[in-house]
Image (cartoon, rainbow, N blue to C red; front, side):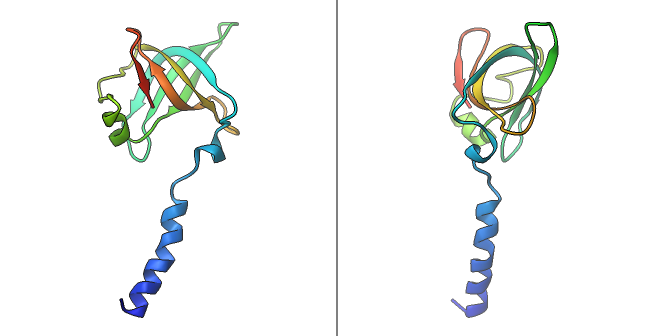
Length: 120
């Protein structure tokens, strides 16, 4: 390998590694939270898909939660498709709450109204 090419590869490796964030850096993996709500939107995008849902608390206040999942490729291998979760579906999600962002969760499992549990 020519020296300039090797130097370029060495320079690009740290950028590629830092481009993907750690779950532990953004989410409290020591706390698991379960929410039930109505899906408002799905973003089937890379590098992570998102499910947004309206969750009503004990006082009746509705908050729209952002639920980060794995990539569409990983979700597909776990049994998901673009039509698995649709707006207005009522789902239950379990995951890790964000450390700094309000109303954000890293998905562990999503349970559909029919009882099917999907990993996320």
